[in-house]
Length: 127
Image (cartoon, rainbow, N blue to C red; front, side):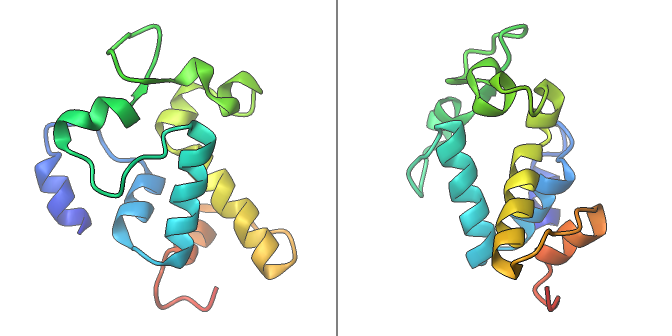
């Protein structure tokens, strides 16, 4: 899945680690992370979205003003000072959500690291 998307997106921007995680697996955990992130970003969309409707759920930066519907500066994460523009563009909001959800599920703080986040999305992982 990631390889196919990588070829399609070869001229686009590089995917962040979290975007690769989310694109690489579809399971109950990844869906909860995606749906929670969409609700917080206020970009909850239909399950099937026409390509021409992508601007409705795409992030915009007022410094660039690409005409997309969701502006980073209006987002909870940015307004509260939790994440900056580049953090949001790299889907670090989803990493925070994954961390929090895992901590709730395992009933103890999740040890956040790249390797542990990768394990959350690894179908063979016991985590």
